[in-house]
Image (tube, rainbow, N blue to C red; front, side, top):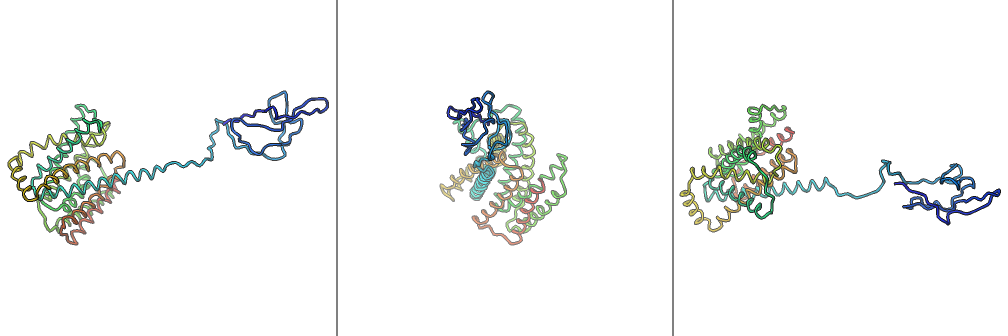
Length: 388
């Protein structure tokens, strides 16, 4: 900032020296800011100021004391020593990530609980999977129609690239539901913690990617832990085990296709998953009818309502709504956090689901089985660290 010095009418006193009339400044005023303080009544020699020329200092030795002026011109880059309290952006970001994780884990736990309750009373995983996708699709269509959420701008190429993602998502979703209809929720998620091993295998064989040695070493506890948990599972079922394995493989392909499809795409994570649900619903519906069919559904529905009562309808609605919400939050969180943070969050999510399901459903578990689950989950965490 440039500070100009303006003399006032009372700033000069007049004396005669040797017949020459001179003006001696007695007070200076600074404009626009009073930057120099306590500088009044400074003594200048009579020949220190030229009255006919612009104001200047002719001799620094005429000052009786040093005056330090803390003012700078506009073109100087020296920072001002001003203490301004700014919001802590890092703390705000951590809080935001924490909210995402807490919401994601809570929705996932609630979905798994209600999904297992529905499958125990109504063992038709194909229809259950279809209802989950249908509910999410309906929710998003209503959101777009009421302007609660902005509808995505898509074209034919978008839906073409989305199709293989939807196929893989449909297979993974149905396979996981079939698995949970046959075995405990905790066992399904222990096997699903082995997904990184499928990621490395598929990426190496089909994509030609190579990984550093720590990544391969991190797969050993994953594979070993899953194998130990499977061997010691009290209620082991081959259909449930294979369903979890197929789900792992399908979701790996879904992630690969999704990365390719979202490159250069302006569709948000929330709308991307909504479109994915709608296309998966169209793919799944005819297969669900062919595998199970309306007659089996009607008989099973009447049996479930007679055993459980009206609460069964609430269970179906809850598992469908929470399935869409937890997946939607997971896709939305990808826009805010790094892949490493997402992987760690996914590992912690499985821990929360396993613990919650064991407590709520009173799932019997042996110490060796728990050890296998812990080793597999630890390997998943090490993999996420080594991958980055």
